[in-house]
Length: 133
Ligand code: THU
Image 1: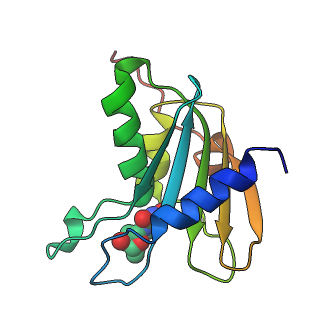
Image 2 (image 1 turned 45 degrees about the vertical axis):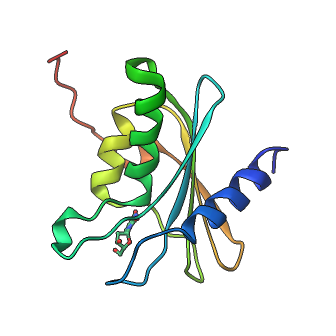
Image 3 (image 1 turned 135 degrees about the vertical axis):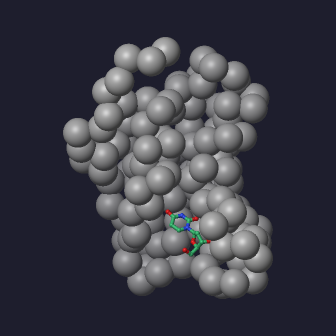
């Protein structure tokens, strides 16, 4: 484990405690490290209208874009879920993460401390490649 990863994992676990989850009671925390070396934490925020819930991953990404603007690029993502084993991000979050980087690792960790590392390419194979920019 590299020097910073332990710290990032602690931060992801810490921010999960801020999650607003009156419905699921499932607190997720995420730290997104940008290529500029900054990091952004996010937690899930639920809503009475369930479909409006924002996952921890997207909360962290939106924070990063709000600070860095369109130059925001993801270097690494760390996710904490309150589960016995690591859980990978949902499909919607994979797509949003991919928008800001096409080759970075996502480290998923959990209560037991077990961690898995997967590249965004593994999590979102055959991502849509449409030239609309
Ligand atoms: N959730 C996340 O924050 N990230 C994920 O990748 C999966 C699910 C949240 C959404 C909801 O608030 C709760 O976990 C249960 O699905």
